[in-house]
Length: 204
Image (cartoon, rainbow, N blue to C red; front, side, top):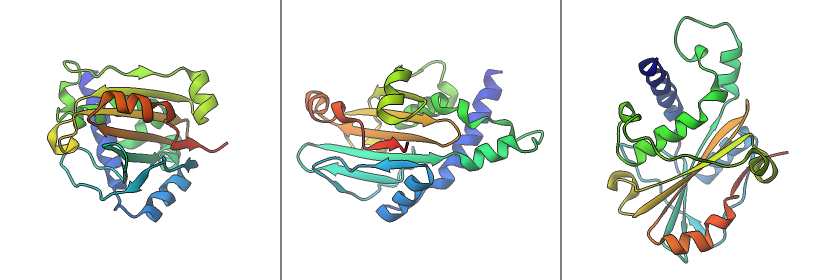
């Protein structure tokens, strides 16, 4: 069962990577619109180029002009996957995967990739996923699930940033969104950035 779970997640992960786009903000905003989300650019940030890497593709990035903090975004609209899942099921492939039950596993897989670790090591190096209460994600993000993970990124993805926090939200049948924060100073991050994890929210 564990091996099947990892295989299914790997298939989904590879398909999601097909959403990779350039760093054009207009393209990213088109994805946001399809995901039925609102994007509010954080204060003191400017767009920065996407850095190609072998660990994890992302769609858009910002840099804080005051603090040494970079924010990277990954958003996956789920409507196509949901339609496929609700249609006739084949014996294998994506039609057997309910997109509404993979957000936690995707968060774990992304955390492992950012650390430079393989998904087949999930059991040995399971990241500490801190789920946010349903009442909070519903009220503040109009989401059905939310969580965060704190870790140390590998050089390939982190480009020598010391720390990383992934904030994730999911809305059933609509989209998964992952906001990746890279930074060097934990105190600065906790004081200036973490209190306002609201650059992405679902529309009401």
